[in-house]
Length: 292
Image (tube, rainbow, N blue to C red; front, side, top):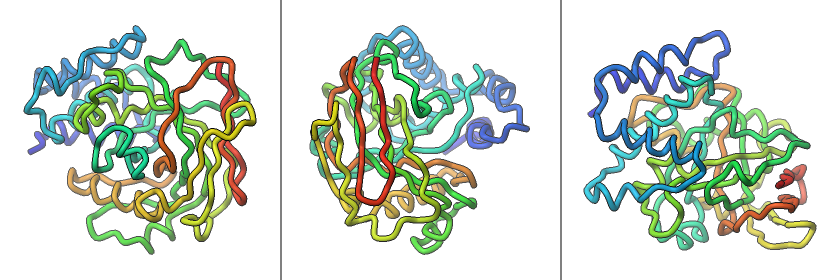
């Protein structure tokens, strides 16, 4: 069960996209409150791994009984450390939504993480591989919302009506634990391994029939992976529904303006320096990442 302090921390995190708010001071105050000691220390361990670019040992090895509730709490504390340093939450990612990704990591259900503003790589900018620990890349579909979505009774029609824009996206996943032996709890604690993301140009509204949209991932113009939108839980909108319903279990929801990465259509691939990675599809503008 969440404490009042944890509820306030989550509220401050999700409100941090509002430029008129002061989320950093709120998070600093709440981090100094009544926190669960080992979970707070784990969040700091992951933060240090990110800044030092060195992986740490798996949480599941050091705390074999860790629950998903514990792991999401570590995730929130980790995000709060970053918001306290000036970052802002700009959306969410849903991971492990395709059979290919679940089989790759031996995990049988989705997870979610928070997108922070510094994770967004702007068009034309390079990603320095030296900033990452164990980077891999995925081609995805993404959405921006025009209205809030919250509650366990939110249906797919309401979600479709709430989509302001549809995008192709590249996500760079980067586990601060490393990927070998990773469990669901490890992934969740490490913010669902979110590292960086790139959005293609927005297409207004919800692109219809995304299940049949074929995404093709290229590295230096050579095709390396592909998959259709239906690989994402049968329909990428269902990924957003899963996220809304999961957030409802902790009294939270999505907010107008949030970006949601719905998930990958293929297994992730190692990311190397000196390459250009792109994801394209017949009806959506491509997303491109240049890696230095």
